[in-house]
Amino acid sequence: MCTLEKKGDIFILTLTGDGEHRLNPTLLDSIQSSLRRVRQEATTSSALITTAHGKFFSNGYDIAWAQSSQVRMAQMDSLLRSVVSDLLTLPMPTIAAVTGHASAAGYILALAHDYLVMRSDRGFLYMSELDINLVIPAWFVAVVEAKVGSPSARRHIVMNAAKLTAKDALRLGVIDSAHDTVAETFEAAQARALDLVKRGWDGHVYAQNRMRFLGRVIRAVEDTSERNTNTSSRL
Image (cartoon, rainbow, N blue to C red; front, side, top):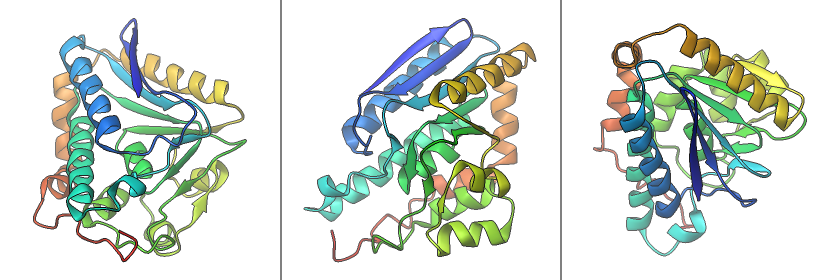
């Protein structure tokens, strides 16, 4: 489901295979297990890159798996919250190298990283909830608000279900850079990770500052009073 390798002070978490990388309990547990290893094995100054094989970074929740039960949707929501919380408190800079489509929950997974680089020859970012007849969770909106500065851009993303190419996303300030190919995208992520590691920051101080900076979104992620019962007749 995913692999973790370490090159010097840089961890590389890869969603493996050519599928859609739908976020179900199996994949989310695998990601969280890798993040626990990253936390345990981190040096004073480290960085994490998350990327994926194939056409998709992640095509969101595994809706087909959840169709039979409201409990399953709530379970996926709880697990994704936990993964996002781990990313937002990880004691190092994090970079998402988006080399394929990232939709809905997969988009949120990418936005949970400190930096986002994206290939420009294929793929898009897509908050698909309106198009698939789901109510967007409040904590998804909090992540978008924290990571996308312009109110008009946030409206375009959430209320127009916009499919953003890398060019669109760069113009709107959603991503940090766009690159022509998969290889160039990953190389850009590695270069940024190396630059950040060279700063020599204490990872725990970095995490505490991120938690201060993103305090509101972290509180929203941890607020389970609004469990993801916002499912439509499709579920």
